[in-house]
Length: 208
View 1 (cartoon, rainbow, N blue to C red):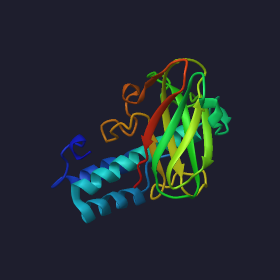
View 2 (cartoon, helix red, strand yellow):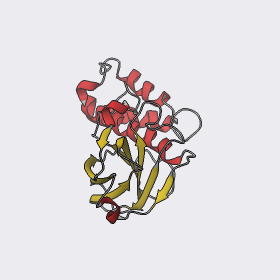
View 3 (tube, helix red, strand yellow):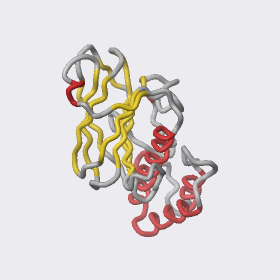
View 4 (cartoon, helix red, strand yellow):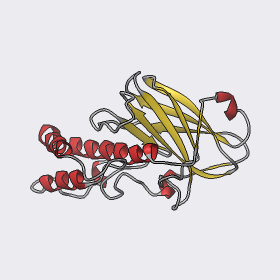
C-alpha cells in the first residue's frame, strides 16, 4: 500500500493530511471535518508513512462506501438466503476480517461498468445482515449473466451513519484504495464475470 501513495511523507506529510481532510465524505454535506484532519496528523505522528498509508486506505474505503449505501436508489433490499446461490446467476461473497460482532454488514451489487459502479442510485441489490466477527458468507442473486462489482460496508454501531473511527469496507477483487483513485477504484479493478451458475468471491475488510 505504501508504494501506491505519492511521496508526500516528510517534509510534506502535513500536505497529505490536508488532502485527505479536504476529500468529501460521500453521503454527507461539505468536506471532512477537522476531526478527520486531526486523525490523519495523529496517524502520521504515531507511526509514520506506513500507518498513514493504512489510515488513508481505510478512510477512503469507508467514505466512498458510505455514499454507496446511503444514497437513494432503485435497487432491491433482500434477505441473505444462501439457497439462492445454489443455481443460476449469483455470487457467494465470502467476507473476511470482520472486526466485531456488532452493527450490520451491508453488501451491494452493481453492474461492472464505468457508469454504474458505485454510482448514486445504480445499485442492483442490497443484503443487510447482523455482523459477526471473523468471516461471513452472503448470497447476492444477480439478474442475469454478466459483469458485476460488489461493495461491502460494516456499520459497526448500526446507526446508519458514517463513523470514520470504527466503520469498515471492502470491494470485489480487493483493489488498492489510495488518494489517486479517491476511494473509488476503477470498475476494471473490481469487476468480475458471472455466468449462468453461482460464482464465489472473497472480500477482505479494511478498517481504520
